[in-house]
Image 1 (cartoon, rainbow, N blue to C red):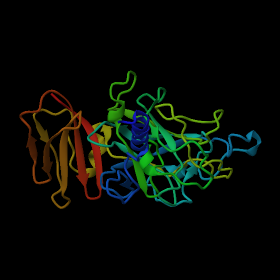
Image 2: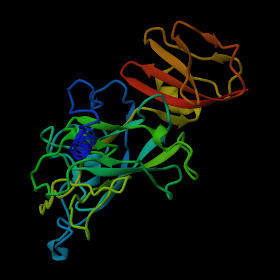
Image 3: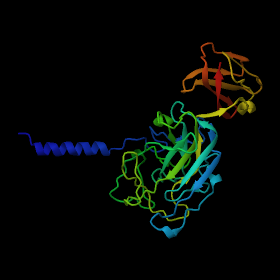
Image 4: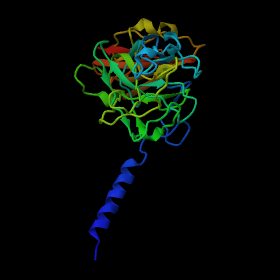
Length: 326
């Protein structure tokens, strides 16, 4: 005879085990990790300006003052991975990052956010939002599967495989990637012309009056309280993988010069002693061709009228710009 009660309990146990199983990429350096090193060749630029709105060191203690560690310049440019060269946001604090160009939705991740964690499991988290007009911001859909029965302590640990689309998932020197494809189709957002990235500290408290929730309504549990000058998310930098710069003069330092608008042939100047290469993509990120300093004229007869992206690599620098084909 089948014991239906026992079978039902077994099924419930199995479902619970399956749903609680880690399901997102692991820590930096492990197989399957999506962490991006700060010196990765896919990063073509870094945030050039940072505006900060500090939060308190402890949201539950209004008289405790605000976070004060670091300054906005510590979050611009290259993310060194140095714990002392970051800006701390405090509980619920935020930073708005801008760039010398616009981030676009290319193949794979489009930018990465760097924090300064000293280990793979002491993780302070932040929401990430983007805007294409500097006014209207839209948040990446985040997931936190960390248990919320007990508060993660001030120096407690998190499992990165239970975290998705929250900055701070990886240790210092490794950025958490974000793919604008996740926000495709949202009214009021041009995913091919992102001008601002906002980083918002997740308070991490599980008390209902202070709790913050992921995109599926779950409370996010991370180290709290952190009543120090370095409270909250410690922003080290934002590295850009897909950046569009408007206008030909933006690449003049690279020699070649791309004449804009173009016809079916791209005319350029070159310096044979300094090799370079360029790749052309559709506005949606499809690679259409590749050429180098060996060519004086690059003819693309299949190029239709419209906007395209040219990625120019010269010595240790890479830059992307938009061109218009007649």
